[in-house]
Length: 110
Length: 113
Image (cartoon, rainbow over all chains, first blue to last red; front, side, top):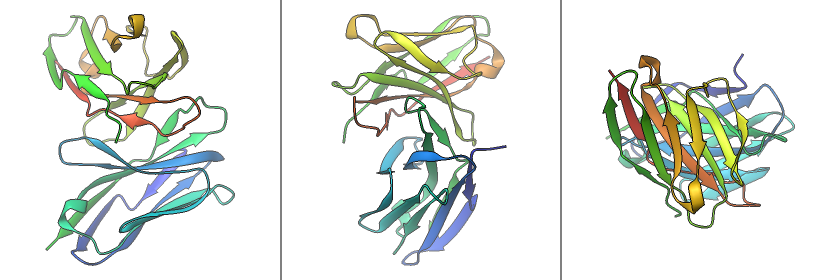
């Protein structure tokens, strides 16, 4: 089965609201990255975490390697937040090989 | 932030031909990667490369695939010969020693007819 299980697969938010995306890992991961893929297909780095929580503006991410999950919280969603969000995790000893989740397609509506 | 450039952004070729995808990684990065994304699906690891050698490759990295970075120039992915199932967007990424964050290019959309 998939090593990285991402949910939900799709999410619709009204501007100003918020929600959380989640990735569960079926094997021990040593780090996680979160990306936003925009409408042009470019991958934008959001966070890299080896543990704990990081915050950047309206985004906050947590990685709990012991319990094998990571979350990405979006608050006060804006139209430009629309896109597909991917988590990607790195197993120990993997030469930084990232295993991606299937993505969450976020649509922010006015 | 750091930029990885990929050339070309689109490539259309006939099945059986050779194609080379070019990647200009971030200037002080030493680790290089290729990922493949079929439309609407997740990114899948193909290969990583360091110090002139392939370190790890996935089962998607078929015998028809090869990578190199001659003399610090572009990091390239060559497919020879191409097959219909090679149609996808190919993303290059790079990272620096001791820093685990990977930076991705904007991808090359390859269409094999």
